[in-house]
Image (cartoon, each protein chain N blue to C red):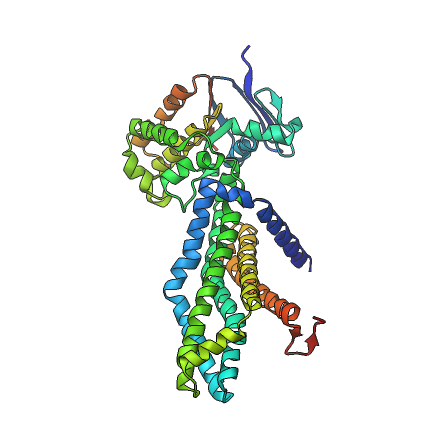
Amino acid sequence: MLQALREVEGGIQLSLNVAARLPHLRRAPILESFLRQVYFTGVTAAGGVIPRACGLGVIIIAVMINMLDADVDLAVKILLLLVFREVGPLAAAIVVILRTGTAVSAEMAMMRVSGQTRALRYLGIDLYDYLVLPRVAGCMLATLALTFYVQFLAVLGGLALSPFIIEASFWELTNRLFELFTPVDFFYSTVKSLLFGFAISACCCWHGLNPPDLTNNAVPKVVTKAVTQSMMLVLLINAVFAYVVFGILFFGLVKANV
Amino acid sequence: MSELAVRYKRKTPRHEIQVTAPQGAVSHVHLPDDNAKAHFVTALLKARGELGEELELFGEPAATVPPTRREKLRMRVGAVSPIVGLMSNLNAWENISLPAAYHGAPPLPEVAQLATDVLTKLGAEPDYFFARLPDELGLLERKMASFVRLLVAAPELMVFDALEDGLSYAECKHAARFEAEYRARQPNGTVLYVDTREDS
């Protein structure tokens, strides 16, 4: 219990520190580190992992449309409600956790264990400035970009595949999608994916900088804990968002007054 | 009597350690064991003594220095030490230029010029040296990178912590040139060689 409280307090402190230091992103080494993070999290993931994740999403959509015996309206609603709002940000978040979360937490823990963080302090370099801020900011931006990429690919894949399952043309489905699409969908997934990126990177940075001990054995423990908690945070944020924005939690058992 | 750059006192159940180093001089300190050495170097780098330690830097008692002044005091001390290692994910140039790039001074072209000059004098080929990661450097080369990184910061007190540890005889002769390079740039600087006693 005490440990959990310590983690929550540490997470809040880290978040406030990052927010207060955002202007420091202009400093050359921090900006460079930020760009590296964006490249690692966003660009390198876009090549292979994301298209595969989207392919899986498209197959799920195809199965659902087939099982529910959907018409044009239902097929588009599935694409919008499920793929655009939920699967897109979640798939991107999972990819970020698996690729970046593991790397960031292991790298930070290794730096802590090998005394590199101590060396930075002796050089007058702030750990939050140099290590945490670029990773958190980079991860947020990259998660947002990946989310849009997943949404675009998955919706496009769903639209391309649906005409083979239901009696509707690609253009018919596309027109209906644009009719049903609202700015709320866009803002919803934007804010959610930024929060996902923030939660994942902040959680992984915090665990990386606070290993249980200063031996090499601590590194895998840190990675396991960081990944598990990041996943839990993402699911929690998703549930809270669904409750706040659409008033539905636990499959409709709890309803918000919105 | 010349002023002291360092005055340090630590009492443990086994030892009583006292170190003094006059400003501008070269001093050799032999401490009883690695633990005592690590305590001493850490206290200098933090500009703060732990419980049971007394430290004065440049005539100022570290215990009573306010945090803002302590930061300035810390910047006057530098150490080539395993305690202040290189960043493993940055190449030698990035390691050398990191503090200057972060603090915004001195300008990077100046850092590059200084690093190239010093490395050339120490017998390294700068371009090849700069491009390598710490894991690709030998022990002497890692110490050289740490030393050049410190020269950029121009500390008034230069600590060489077990400088010859792990080096061959030929490499020790290279490392011995560090002091002259430092002296050439900081004529009034204080040099402190710290090591453990050979019988310990």
